[in-house]
Amino acid sequence: MALFVEAAQLLRRSPRARWANWKFHVAFDARAGLMISTASIFDHQKNARRSILYRGFVSELFVPYMDLTEEWYYRTYLDAGEYGLGLCAVSLQPGTDCPANGVLMDGYFAGQDGKPVLTPNVFCIFERNAGDIMWRHTEFGIPDRVVTESRPEVTLVVRMVSAIGNYDYIFDWEFFQSGSIKVKVGLTGLLEIRGTNYTHKDEIDEEVYGNLLSENTIGAFHDHFITYHLDLDIDGQNNSFMKSFLKPVKTRHQSPRRSYWTVESEVAKTESEAQVKVGTTPVAELLVVNPNKKTRMGNLVGYRLIPASAVSPLMSEDDYPQIRAAFTEGNVWVTPYNMSEKWASGLFTDQSRGDDTLKTWTSRDREIENKDIVLWYTMGFHHVTYQEDFPLMPTISSSFELRPANFFESNPVLSVKSPENITIIDCTKMV
Image (cartoon, rainbow, N blue to C red; front, side, top):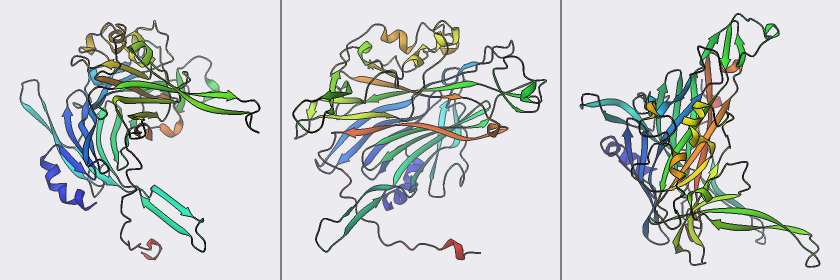
């Protein structure tokens, strides 16, 4: 978009980003790395700017290896709290980590001596046009006419990469003109491997806690759990958490049909009622709503959380690493806002015995209805290693989406104009 191109020089000097109907703040933190805050969207239908996200960031990244040998059993890392995603953030490479249309930004954090430490080119902000369709329709219902309208999906991405030991983590926040925010994590880098005497799978006659990837090389099984702190302010500070269920209904003599499904919703009043294990709990929709705002149709204004995949820990709850990372036992937690509750693994993670974590905070079972609340979401990967992962792993990714749910009165991107005629280069004729 022209607006983004014109703002490029300003973005290099200012942490505030404005693009399309979005406005938000970009910050750099030694522990969390990339932080997005005060994200709001301009609603053309109401002619007003409306709040969505007060602050969002990675609160913790738990990586337990499943190798129980003497040299490996302790490798259960809490990367944000023990190492720092910001401290491990790297400079992005123009043209590869950051596309040609990207704007690179520096980041600073306080060193041990109190002086500012510069990480150049730590953020990349760029427009993405990957050929996706924002919306389209072909209408055949008009006599003697076929009408087709479509719009390309153009988004804005904010990116940071942290190289934590052997792994490189790619953190993306992607903003859509429709009001959605897609949060994505990509994993690449070198596998953590262990030497072995085995040179062929048929030789293995014991538990080796991984797969044989090459001669004398075991790739250990392990997990990645990324916990996000999402302080949502959906059209205002006081919000509620709602779970919606799809309920099948049998009918008799009302219709030739014999069944249908409907939606039943419940508002979580306390922290315990809000906990969700995605994939095991029969919940269809997870929403944060503003109970004090309704659309003209009478629906509560809200946003919904859409997970891309569901992963839960497989270690036993009495395993010491799992005690320290008990916050991964649920994918979704909701807490009342507390300025001291930022880090899911506790303030002093390296000294943690699991007594100051998100799970222990929620054991107080505080009220969360119509309060300033924080949504915590954990995505994850069970990494079964394969030969293609060795020695350097192609990127694998997962994500979740925050999507409007009766936030707007109607589709907010119907007014997006059709792009001007674009000259397509025939690459087959280029030498």
